[in-house]
Image (cartoon, rainbow, N blue to C red; front, side):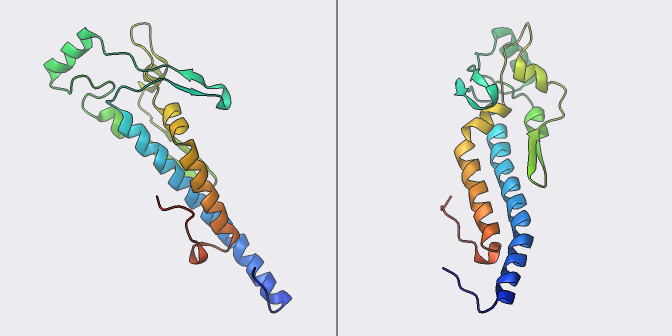
Length: 166
């Protein structure tokens, strides 16, 4: 337990916390978004299993279906990797970015095909990328945010000791 020599020392501590907390939380939001970003990029080109979540009405996200033989032939003619869904030149994967402002972060892409990939089309099954990346990393994101909150509450990074090693 921490003790203070005077009310002035306690007030200084509170001012430090008030300044450190938003910075630490923002850093945590950025780090959490980095985890989701890396996972979303990493899963491009790999068949994903179905994933279920009761969060935000997501429900069941279906497993990625095998690429159609006609798609594989087109990819082979173009010299792209075979048996690698959503991966051709790597262009789509490389457009996935993050943006963090304050306590909010977005992981996504401005690629016009994103809705077709996520939701599917009459000729292409859905291959969701972003919700599965967030769901798979929920525990890690929550841990990162908890550690950031603790860092802010104890006065910032100078006193911060991570709760975990990874």
